[in-house]
Image (cartoon, rainbow, N blue to C red; front, side, top):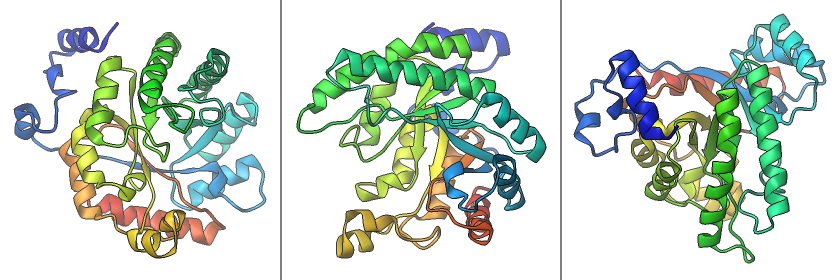
Amino acid sequence: MNRKEFLKSAAIITGAAAVGLYASASSPVLQNRPMRNVALKKSLGLGMIKEELSLTDKFKLAKDSGFDGVELNSPVDFSISELLKAKAASGIELPTVVNRDHWSAPLSDPDPAVRRKCIASVAKSLQEVRDLGGDTVLVVPGVVNEKVSYEQAYITSQNAIRELIPYAEKTGMQIALENVWNNFLLSPVEAKRFIDEINHPLVGWYFDIGNVLRYGWPEHWIRTLNSRIMKLHIKEFSRELMNSKGLWEGFKVDLLKGDNNWPVVMQAVRQINHTGGWLTAEVNGGDRNYLKQISAQMDVIIGYLN
């Protein structure tokens, strides 16, 4: 089922005006749609928890630090039963996973065997996140380098993602493509087009708020990608540090102390009536005191929503 058929059937079932789901940011549908309160739970990557603890105790520490969820790398390093046991004991949720093979075996690779490896890995991630009670797998769509041209990456990665759609449909899970420093899909208009050409309701965007500050403004991306955004990653970035000390140094700044204009960013999230439900930290972690600090910073940012 393509995106148009999905939206048509959804409108029949619910009586909703589903045409607004993928309206562009400049569309009258978006402009005239009333804003509502947007709810976001806080999550963090498992690797951010730096204390030497059992899996269950790490989950409990995340919960005690103010987080509702933990994001895992997938295919996971633990058995599903072990993860579910720790989840039940801690009260934590496992809403999303990050596929771990999309860099070493990218979907844009010209070698079909490499692409097949990534497709198999993402398919496993889709099943794992379903088993864990989540709904979304983060996938890097492709990588452009001296051996893979931009146009080649565009065509090849789209075709590979289309091969993943049957696995997404079988599990009911979402494939969310993230904006990363991969020399690919460098503007919100292009990212929007990339998703729309795939044209499937289970393929969207995992928007990283901090990653675009190198070459843009997150609020612009949010308004353009609109309901294509399935989930949100949060990190900070300083252009001054990038320019004075080096590119990657830009990330070495705490939340609320970089160049994100959080009131404006969160207003954009609210304007699109974002329904993804989660804001996941992707920053350097630490001990329980540092995690509580990150949680408190995220509370301030979420407070700008309403």
